[in-house]
Amino acid sequence: MTEIVVSLPEMVSVSLTVNGSLQTLSLDPRTTLLDVLREHLDLTGTKKGCDQGQCGACTILIDGRRINSCLTFAAMYDGAQITTIEGLAVNGVLHPLQQAFIDHDAFQCGYCTSGQICSAAGLIAEGRAKSADEIRELMSGNICRCGAYTNIVAAIEQVVGRS
Amino acid sequence: MINFQYTRANDVPEAVGLIGRNPNAKFIAGGTNLIDLMKMDVEQPTTIVDITRLPLKQIEGMPAGGLRIGALVRNTDLAYHPLVERRYPVLASAIMAGASQQLRNMASTGGNLLQRTRCHYFYDAAATCNKREPGSGCSAIDGNNRMHAILGASETCIAVHPSDMCVALAILEAEVHVTSVSGDRVIAFADLHRLPGDTPQRDTSLNADEIITAVELPPQGFAKNYTYLKIRDRLSYAFALVSVAVGLELDGDIIKEARFALGGVAHKPWRDPQAEAVLRGQPAVATTFANAANVVLRDAKGYGGNTFKIDLARRGIARALTQAARGTPQSQSSKKII
Image (cartoon, rainbow over all chains, first blue to last red; front, top):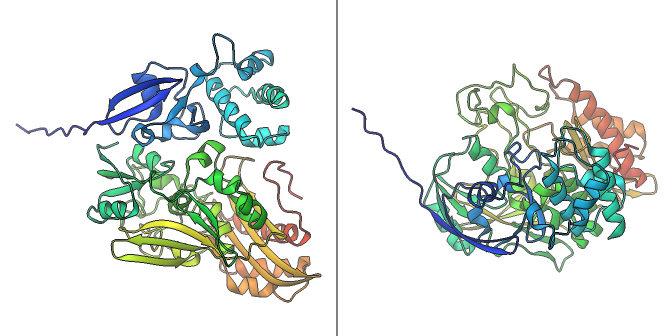
């Protein structure tokens, strides 16, 4: 008989404030923030597309900055403030970007949409995109395989114009 | 991904102490490349030393006019820093030409330097690759090599260094400050990345127990006559087929000082002193630019899928030198090449 040796990971304690609520977790250090959100906290609005930092579906805001949550180990972000698509609406009122995506019909299948909206929220906070060209360039980390780009840019322009 | 032990370092001595004792340990900062490689089992560290809390996040002007960039400064923070935008716009432009804003918000300065090639055979554990597994062979030489090197390659490896930022740092003649338990040293940028030769598994001259603490820029920033021209398969969020960073100093129409480097064509940002010498003292006209391109590409070699890059580089160099001489650098948002 062959002895099978299984090495168990040494768990890491991680505290995160997710959409305003403090969460303390004990995690396998391999756990990405994306998997914490989806598998541990049941926040499935953040999507797993490529899981390699190439599609942007997993975009969330950490301390107000947009990042790809699939390319993080949650342990590295102990103490961070995280905002996901579930945290953008306030008291049931849609975030201006969510309303703009509805106004402009800026999605088809919807799989990339939460990443698009979180990314656009980061873009507006950065304050660098003024023109449609600049929006397109600074949103290039979010792929839409339905090809809804024209309406996505229009929706973001609407909110950039008001901010 | 294999199991690993997660450790957090609180200062530089602790970080180098942890790495120095363990050959299977890796530092993690932005994580944008390392985590990807760990998911593919290309990198299999058994210990991860998290260095994100180290005090290496400052950008400081130096008394003599240079700039000191902490190794943990995020790519976005570097590109948008007022001193970089004003004095080193070629660096800001090159950073904004690479990756996506989400990745630039995560990626560190030191990590950008140490990122690994995106050769698909390097990433594919089922393929042979001398960089991933020395002695196994190179699948790219006779394979799909559209993205691969035309300069400085060897029979063992034709991978390219993927960074845009490093192409700008090459012409700025940055210095890389490193530390280990044995002390500090400074590496000239040209000596950091190496050619593959018969040891393609080594990307840089950094030792395994060393950490990059800062990148320093000399005062010369070429803020007036510069460009970063990146040519790729789609207009954004793609690696370069060929990129060109240029910095010129002009006296009327005469080129006083000239530096240019190529990205996407070699195992390191490619600078050639002989090609730059062709430009100095000459009028900033098309024939001068063509002469310089011919010199830098004199030993260029294609491998089938990437042979088109030789002509693409020739034209890209001429275009980039023209943009720099005219003071009309390539915009990274409006994609029209003028």
